[in-house]
Image (cartoon, rainbow, N blue to C red; front, side, top):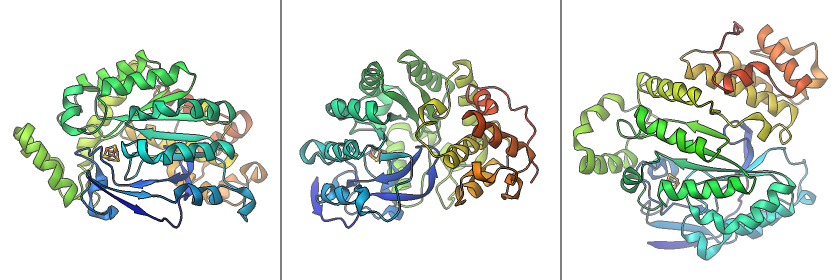
Length: 385
Ligand code: SF4
């Protein structure tokens, strides 16, 4: 393993619009590269330009805290911060990978986040996050914290092959249970499930059962991508060693798409399996609204609900206009409540969407959304524009 220390120019990354999965407006990566070395990690693909050998070499942004201190200071900003969670993790590194024990950049960043009263969402695979339970409880009391752990399954043996550098799923679940007991919202990203290995109904159900047992607030599900080049080559080598009989199945679903996606039929089939099982367990398949209603701006609340609705319909194999409407709303300069009576002028907004927006503005929620979040059927007709 080699460690390269660099001086970063900026740390806080502003999203162009609210990220509906993480509910974030800002994100940060304090390291580049990740020694967790998950076999399927797309950080390995050439498009991310991670220096050195992925899984072994790490770049540390040694001046990150100094820069972040400046970036989070509202007095230094011309425009005010957007409301939303600050996302720590995701991308091409895990903020709690082993190097964090030495540099403590994540801990120091959380202290700044607390100082400036931001809510935070953390996505990790590491139980090292327990070290920061004190500061996370303080942030949760002051603003809000969501802790998400990612899993490809809850099977320890399979995880040891595909996630060689991380604590086992059993240990991750224990950590999630600990944070739940402390009153912090927690979820599972069952993502990516590994084709023909962890995407079986049996393993999906096992994961959902575990999530229910410890009272997780949501599970977000997704399949795997394999980009041509380093990511795919590395993955297929490991596959060959442990599951050589699956080579043909993989060739059938990964057909050199630009973004490394598997075929639509494959994703539809696993989505449908997940959807049916999640419904049986009454498990929310997106972050539930009570965890973000008070955090987001009015427009962003509408955008997130519409994007989640679009997702629910896609999981049923249907299309919807909600994503287009959500994008148009995300570009508005004015708040929706000042535009009452003219919603239909917004691109993608028809009568049904207009009614959904009106209900959200009036009640802070959408009954249609609540129904689909808990696995109800989408009976509402959809806008045609
Ligand atoms: S923990 Fe996340 S970032 Fe790190 S190697 Fe695994 S998938 Fe990649």
